[in-house]
Image (cartoon, rainbow, N blue to C red; front, side, top):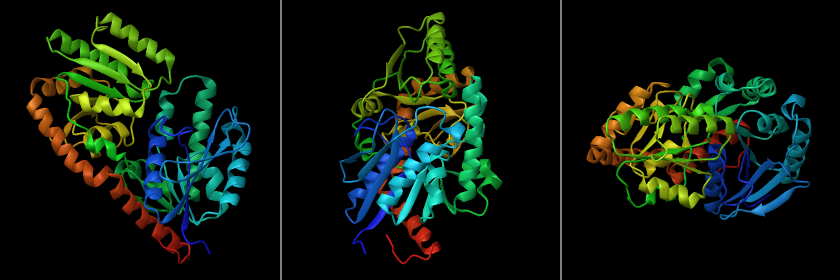
Length: 390
């Protein structure tokens, strides 16, 4: 019998230490680091990445043992992830976990939940919502297949961790008889400890550059604000996932004469992300669809107010007029009004940021999330008839 319980986190994870791409990688990284940092658990991570010819092993900063298997480069979802499922299943047999925590709802649960280990699933995103914005026949086909795999994941899961009531209402009957648990995503503690170096009028957008994020509407709102004489600068941070959409956004920036107001930084280091939060006066996220954006959690932990669209799980993260403002998607006028109110009253904006930070402590602080997650793990093991506890 092992001295420590072995927890396996399965899902997207940074290929290299400190180089996080996207919110799901951030969640699995912060969660596994928090679990490993306790010192009383044997924490393993299993992920896949393109460009590899064989499995890779490394140890994270906090001591999690990370296994990265090669990811099939083409046609994965069109073949039921056959190759990738075999690779993940083989690695799981070598690891022999006491409990498996699976993230996302397509390839990884299809490969991991069928192994029969005590398990819990955390879905990220909503495939049947996001398919509305996908372009191109192959991509749309892949996303529609993703919807089927999403259903399969929920059918297999007996325990599901949901980020908010929005997901529970959206997935509805798809969740079947699974036991639901509600836990927010963890974020790095560094965001709670950032100094306040607010630059008046600095607006931050952070996220993947693709149509779903609605960045073009922020450009239109900025045009309205400029016409009113507002002083501001927009910092756009995040990886480019749709180059055509970025070209469209930049074209709109040029049309509106806003080249001197927009700075497109692209992908930056985690250290620079933290600095951006320190300096901004607010975060703006004008998305079409969101589940529980890490950017909002991080901004609130940093003590910044947020202006975002009232879509998905965002209204459960922002208390209107108290920690920020929510506006309808695709309404640049309403977006400009909300941003303008914060620009015009920086003292009020700072007060809202402080209130948001207090709320973030109990929701997003990693130690708080870890304790809630361990309580779920205990339930999962008890449900499976295992005496081991965390």
